[in-house]
Image (tube, rainbow, N blue to C red):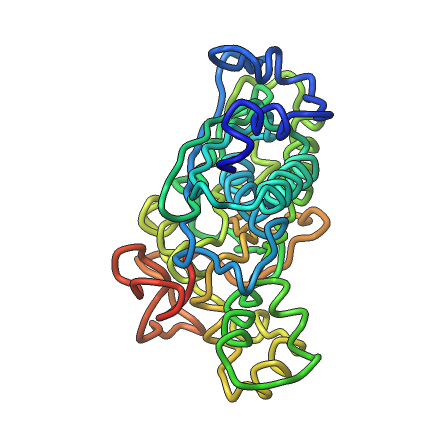
Length: 337
């Protein structure tokens, strides 16, 4: 980095990249211009810090780049919007190898493309540690946002994506166990795989069903929606509080035999990974009772009167999920989050 310099590095990062049609003006000016077709846009930002959220001895630069984009894209999709653009701020030491930055940007662009968007610009700064801050934009397409506040008593609770695999991967990295059977879990921890299409296809179906509806929820899509970043119990707890309801989960529907086999290798509890492990960036939502769920969604519980989240009618004990200022101080002491 020191030898190449900032502006040459910017040229290197952007060389050969093609913007999507949502980016009206990309890198090269004082700011980017991003389309907002219905007059609004969804925006979110998130940050990754070396040895807090990732470790270079566990993850490749491509993995880290994909993860940085995925966790932001998942937040946009969880609001019912299609990702349109990302801007990225990168801080790194002057002696950072160019190959590491190349890997980061390749991973970011690959995940941005998987989400249907592109990287419109960003910033570079010298810093002590590797720090990545991503801001993501999304288009609601004329729909009202999907929030945490719409759950209704009687709704079905369903999930799209896998739960507990990132937590299993963390356990696999920290355990002194040599087994090829742990490779899938480690990969899940390195790079989340949010099932963007499971949400966006359902929302597209809603728009087709009611094309003349003003921007309010028509009832065809989820009543409430969030991504699972802090743990299933924690994130459903946010829906329960925002909606003024209770949520009861069915433990039998949450079981994952493949995850249970990994837990047996590590002398761990797969159910705990599923309930409290974060960073899978699956999506969980509540749907009108009795409706056919879109492809990729699996029923795991129901919305009931009351408050809080229960499992088989019983309030869980212990840690309910991740909180940034309550966890370990670094990735070497606990979960990189």
